[in-house]
Picture 1 (cartoon, one colour):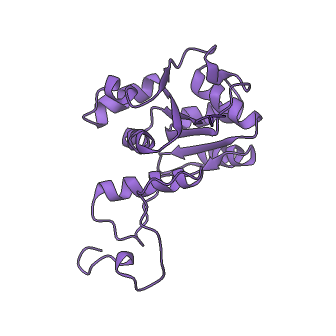
Picture 2: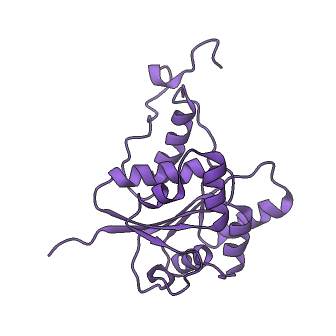
Amino acid sequence: MAREPTRLIVAITGASGAIYGIRLLEALRKARGVEVHLILSRGGKLTISVETGWKVKDVEAMAHTVHSDQDLAASISSGSFRTAGMIVAPCSIKTLSGIVSSYADNLVVRAADVVLKEGRKLVLMPRETPLHAGHCRLLLRAAEMGAVIAPPMPAFYNAPRSMDDLINHSIGRVLDLFGIESGLVKRWSGPGKPAGRVPKGEA
């Protein structure tokens, strides 16, 4: 019997950092046996056009299935449609608030709500700074509901040399959470190793 592909939902919402969602789609396109279901919020589409040189149609072309954010009858709106989980990259505070409140007036929030209620993995990549107390409370409540909070914070033990290095590491670590090897992560192998030190003058 043929093995079903791993279905993964990806949402790009209106926070700054659309490149994280785009890089995620690029990595998943290279992964074997992964079926990607994509949702772009209206804010996400705007941010793609403002922050990147990508066209929305080219971003959508990297997914196997693209769902309208307003299609609450989409396959991924039902728990009976099996998926491995969902990644929201980046996750706006508005989307975070909707998820925490189970206010499913769009497909991003509904799909996230389904993932949580079915006990599947929901990974949120919030991209906002600084955070006030209300933001922090929302993040805590999301974690208490079962979401994994994975803000795209840069790591430096891998001696990044470019913006791409920083983006790739964050995306690779998120894919680690689903057991998907992306080849994007320079893994820590102990202190003093060549990959673990930023050269003098570049710190």
